[in-house]
Image 1 (cartoon, helix red, strand yellow):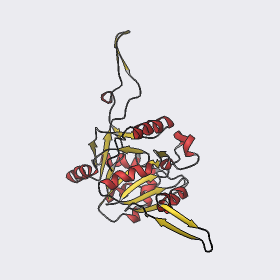
Image 2 (cartoon, helix red, strand yellow):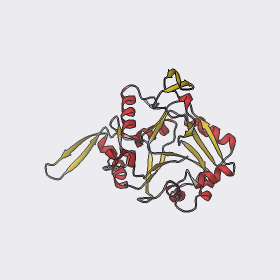
Image 3 (cartoon, helix red, strand yellow):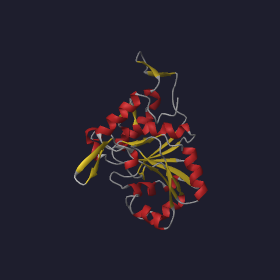
Image 4 (spheres, helix red, strand yellow):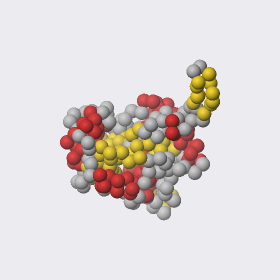
Length: 255
């Protein structure tokens, strides 16, 4: 089953970093967040990736083109004929297809453009800016048990602030922030049946018109995930993920 990752947006809310590189290439612990996402899928055995690139897409292509060189010891011999020898030749057992889906294409349009690469009945899809410890195998079982076109992973984002309890205007208590105080949102990590392409007409945000049509047709179910999930929309969230990485990284299921 192929894994489709949306990696073509501008990342305007984290422009401090994305002015130079695509948002999915922003590093956490020295590795692009895109790499972290791919490592999780690979941990569950899904190693055939389609990257929906766009903004500064050449940087993503160059990263994978030079992956072995960047992760291995290398001898550059400039004496006479130039020779390059790679030692220990480290690489991942992945297949990565990087598709230029357009500079300013919206998410629905990007998904539509990779349709020629999808041959199985179902495929996996997520966003290139969020990590999670969701169990991909269980997610797929859930999807298959319902037989719908779209299964999304529903998560509760961490609340940034604490809360006040009132009696009229009187403050009774100060409560710490809690995930129980917020509702579920779409956290990505989807399983999609290839029939989803029939619902994407034109260049739309996938989360708007196509998913609304799917929901109205009763074709969307939610897999509730109460474990770790964190997106990286802002520089503050990038720093949070760096702190997580330095203290155990709850999404790091691989060795």
